[in-house]
Image 1: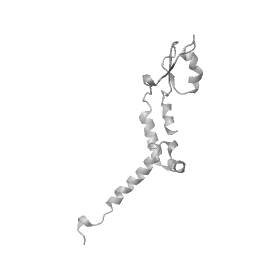
Image 2 (image 1 turned 60 degrees about the horizontal axis):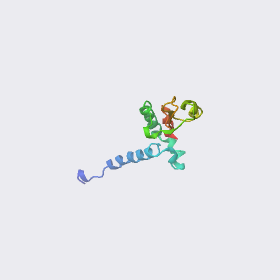
Image 3 (image 1 turned 90 degrees about the vertical axis):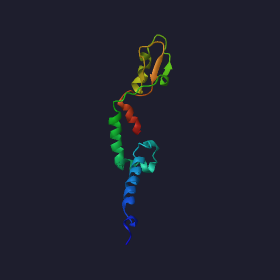
Image 4 (image 1 turned 120 degrees about the vertical axis):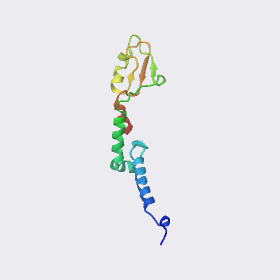
Length: 128
């Protein structure tokens, strides 16, 4: 009979098994690798069968939904509006269709446009 410290045990395999599954689930949940970059073979079935996809998606949304998104000063696209127009009047057709916002819509000298959405809709881009 072997002494207690030399007997085979099932502890190491039991500890490694969850780690392997958690690693696979984390890799194909869209968090470590964005959905668009997951290999097509895995993307079309494992991504949707993976419970972490839905758990982490919900956690990400609820954790980040009220965080304001604002551009830094050097991230604005700056350009002059046409003579006699405000930035809001000049950019209205574009801003209605594109994400983003104007820093000072009433300015007639310089338009500063941020391409980032200031609302939680920006989170929808994480899954695409």
